[in-house]
Image 1 (tube, rainbow, N blue to C red):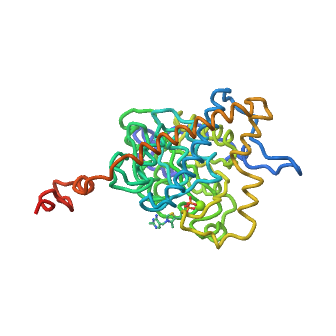
Image 2: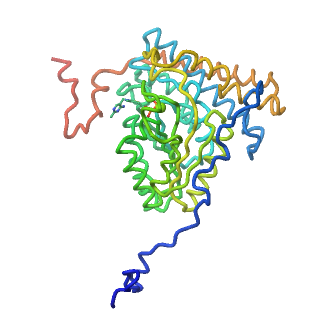
Length: 385
Ligand SMILES: Cc1ncc(C[n+]2csc(CCOP(=O)(O)OP(=O)(O)O)c2C)c(N)n1
Ligand SMILES: [Mg+2]
């Protein structure tokens, strides 16, 4: 058959099969409905009132926020007592992004959390005792003392352990979602990424692949102002990270990442869209990293007063407490009760993790590589000699 002069297409049925029908997209490419807004003078920041969440769920969100903050505070204590092996990474000031986004998922969905996303790990069902034992490299920890801090996962719970904090988890999640599609499983995947990690090649390749394949991938891009000591203006030339979605032909949101309800609502919409076959979505969460890259970092590169401003005016837990109390969702006594319960759980779990032995050397040295190919570095035989 001759080629059409105008389109160059042959017009056979076979070719038509290759032209996929595209489901409708969002009209507005970057939605700013849940973006941060400027408060009136002297008005304390709260959370969006537009939510479908019920009272019990709102209290559960509060519990996860407090759990995240207080577990991290306990980790810092353990670190100062030199009980932690390796560094401690905080999500102070960013808890609402991780908790709200993960709460919008179904149990069968997958996440790839990074060092600022402990809240998402808890929402996925990991217990504080696992975190404490992992940070202290104890035998009862999830990696049995083989790896550090956040480097573990739980496939049953849909939580993939990180390879790196930079872009590498994006292609990994794209692969998971492609495999799930081939197995006819209707899951969505949330991959977290920092403003710095978004500048890497792996991020671009992974998201481009997901966009082209219309995989149900949701990127949560955490605009927390710094990548290690690099400020955002030296990291990217765009104002909003969400603008980058245009380069992949996917819709995007800008959300106030310090508003736990907004983070939930936006991720819920993205998850519904992705599950319906709409493809990948980019969510940019505006937030702020109040601690350094890790506990060793003294943040001398941060302009004076900046951290204090965020602590005083835009703390996600203060904002949420204001929302719950002023909207009569909960009383102060109820919130104190939840906090006391969280502290009790942390005390118990920390004691449990501290009582764990360190791993036996020969056990810690095995299963790091495939031991059929690479013999373990330390073998009982060697120890006996
Ligand atoms: C290949 C590689 N290079 C460098 C690092 C060290 N590193 C870990 S996190 C990070 C900066 C990440 O910044 P960002 O993506 O903004 O995330 P944030 O820490 O702000 O959450 C760097 C340089 C690494 N983990 N892997
Ligand atoms: Mg960052």
